[in-house]
Image (tube, rainbow, N blue to C red; front, side, top):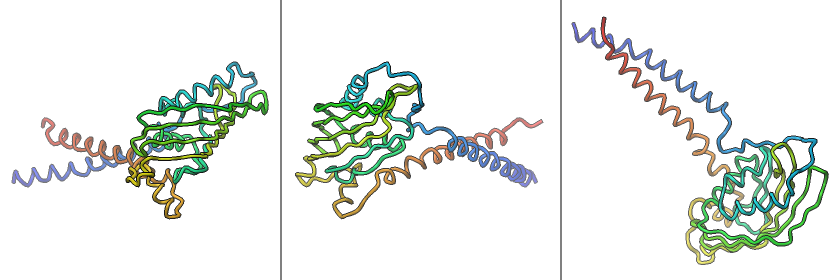
Length: 248
């Protein structure tokens, strides 16, 4: 008789505990879907009537410094939420358009972020003023990179940037990196390239892979899986608390 009462008590607890788990999981998913992504820049470009107070070449110099120091967060801070970055030319499967800023972070994280050492020399710097708050900058980057994913990389890049002055200072709205030279020691020696760059293999077969789709599953599903795990643990804790609470 006692055994039946014990089983009845446990069965009565199953339904409320299950409801708690479902409610917590749903709340976590709604919160994550509405919260701003941590992989995007919080800076936005807004119109401003004030004239620039910082020379553009000073900002470009800092941009190049963040590039050579492999500072992904620093690089991303120069882009607005809706900025567009295009990689074109001789750059294998990494050629493509990256937008919004979250995808720009991804391309830097999987290239510059994988570098051990990186040096870059800037030449032929020029500016073209479009309006008091819009200026185009062009220059050439000669890069030597020691990467864990591609080996020793020699590259020459023609860079074109559209900078807009706003409340957040100078920010890039449009940018094009045209690779006129891209040479990787891993590719030259026919060594296997790490999975961070599977686009090279697809491109060699005539495909047009997307870097974003490669990372979309783990980047987007990860937070929801974590929310489900926390909801499950919370449900277990609630069940234990209800099961062993003092009886009156």
